[in-house]
Length: 510
View 1 (cartoon, rainbow, N blue to C red):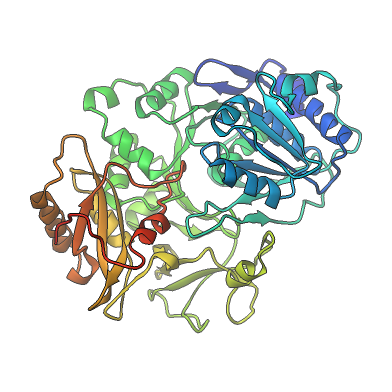
View 2: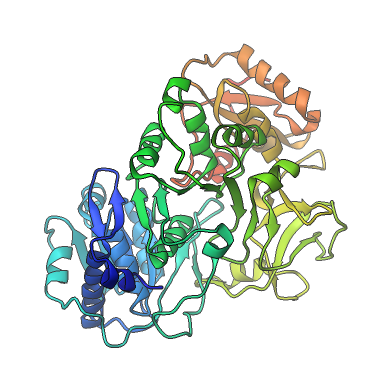
């Protein structure tokens, strides 16, 4: 269904509840998205044009999304943590004809330059050269525009392996409004869903799931930024039934003292789904022990070429899997494009494509299979077992070649993440005159752990007990923070770049 249906049936029903108490009702979401749609049409935007926005987690973000979705526009959210240059690149690259930013973003970035002809709208106090969001909406009617058409997202890849590129797919051809059963049928959720969204809303997964919740008529509870104990409190307060998290959030929840973790009533929670980054086996086991068999997992991407999924029962009988492909057949190919036998490792491809990287023919071509069968890949390496369950080894870009042997750093990362002294870890290859590359780890410790050479040796030994020696770090260094995106993805590219021409010179343990 469409949010407008619920606005007519039950106008006061909460569509969005912020963690600070602000509420956006379905009637307000319907009327304000209609007003913005009228404003965009008045500004000259037509079906197929682009609108971009950059803001913190706040109710106006959903107004922007639904205005685009009902106007046949592509919408592009930018992370509010990006630099000014990065935001300007995305706004220019996507060809936005309107850019909406919050006052908090402008306070941090200053005056953002946009392409000629691109309107600028600020949420909050007026700024020179910017129209205010409230004034723009107030000048427009609350009824729907006369030429409603289905829009779509054009999201940018996280940039973990280079300059971000927009993922563009053709606009839906069906008239607006229309929808068909999708993930809600797989997940078993309906109109009574109360969804906790703890992640940044500019990311693909929160956007997909929150728009799905609005089509169902459910309520979205939004954290402006993730805090472990606050998430538990919100689940209890709002009787949350469904949430989506990333593994780093699981780790922070598990690291809470027992008296804090057990203080809150989580009995309303029926489903907790995770994705976006590898989850160490020990962490997932602990979450299932705590929350019960409601912890599900999926593997997908901004490119939306696949949906691989498993529930707790499946995962417990196939530990380490990300699930089975539900909609598209999966194929594991070697470097020559030949399919490998079951159980052998190669690049993971899925039948079908349907997307392009905006303005980058080479990157689009690199995502397709070598033999031209119409399959595409997210660049991950893995294998499929006899039961059809997919296991991811690593990203091809992260693979280490040491002495001619392929090393997949995710294995060592998972082992080190299970050590009680380790809060975060990245394993990658650095130059080595003898081996070509050697396995190196950067570790962020828990607050009560001391960064000593003895602890570094202990971590290496911890790894060697559980993995073959060639897979384990030969060197370890400690840092206060690791570069991660707001959605928990590790930006190894930034770490590797530090050592691209020479081995590390800072003190480390060997």
